[in-house]
Every structure is written in structure tokens, then in C-alpha cells.
Image 1 (tube, rainbow, N blue to C red):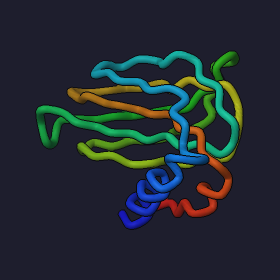
Image 2: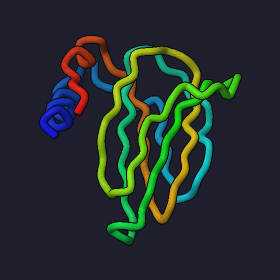
Image 3: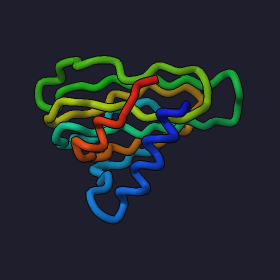
Image 4: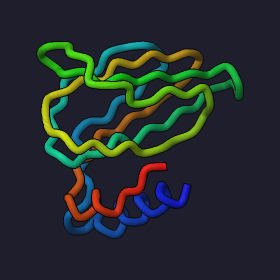
Length: 123
């Protein structure tokens, strides 16, 4: 939790200069595959999950290469409302494959500076 707060504060501090630039933002409530987005390393996925029920929501996100459809890896699997950040250290063109159950979700792909990535600590 402390790392999430630290990253959020750092993103606000750097907002005037080298701040995280939102590359793409996706919102929805159903399962889908997002449009293609291009990012340079490092970048963040800022996710938020909400729903009308406390225990029935679910969200599963997988990162795939845009043009080949190759599975890069599972980004998130949760059955609870909440939010978080995920750091990526590779560039490319990607899509997010989203499986959603009784949930409203928001995903922001944010380009960050290497100095900001050094301060990131996974939880």
C-alpha cells in the first residue's frame, strides 16, 4: 500500500514536468480486447475496479502483443474491488485482453520516466 501511495505522490509531483503521460484509457463493464497502444519502457498500468456487489466482481487482465496475438503474461487477477499500479519494463505495441464479471473497470496506460520507475516497489 505504501508503494502505491508513493507512486501516486510521485506522479503528482512530476505532473508539471516529466509526468506520466496517459497513452490510452479504457473503460468498460464487459469482457473485451482493447485497441492497440504503443509504449516505450518504462510504463505503468493504473487499474481501478468497482461494482455493485462486494464479493461477486472479478477482473482478469492479460497483456498480448498487438500484431501477433502472442500471450505476454497475466497482468491482474482479482475478485475484489480496488485499484493498483503495475510497472512494465519493455516497449512495444500491445493490447489488453479483459475478462470481467459484474464489474466496472478503468485502465490507464501511462508513460513514465526512468527516474520514476526506479522509485517503484512492487507490492
